[in-house]
Image (tube, rainbow, N blue to C red; front, side, top):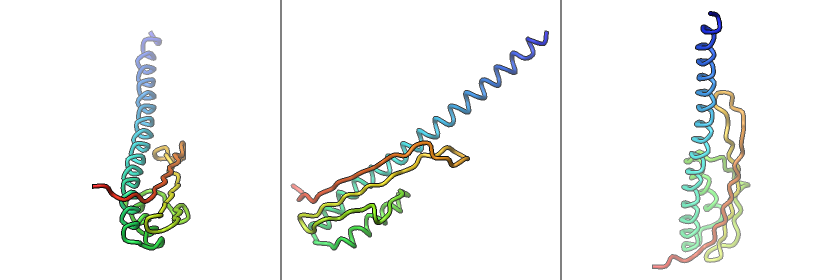
Amino acid sequence: MMGKLQRPNARRLVLVAWILVGFFYFYLSYDYIRVSIRDGKLSEYLDHVVELAGNENRPPKEVRSLILVKAEELRLPLRSDQIEIRGGGQSLNVTVSYQAQIELPFVERVVYTKDFQHKVGYHQQRY
């Protein structure tokens, strides 16, 4: 008689465990996708900024500031020293490298670090 009573409890426990595992995988996937989408937006912005700065001969300091403001807006962990700017005008090249950390919910423990790198060179817009 006791075995029958424990079986439903064991099933519930297994169900709860699977729900928790599913939640953690969903959260990690969501966090990874969210960071990747934000990086895609940064990439588009880099193309725009390099084109604009190349056309208008903007100084490297201004280009760096524009990139940092956008990264902050997108809540990406980008620092000034992770942006390399070479040349100017039509020879402008920008390299951005940073890491985003994917953490477990509630415990804030890093389980995965995603590296992002962008190399953008000036190219004149073709109409």
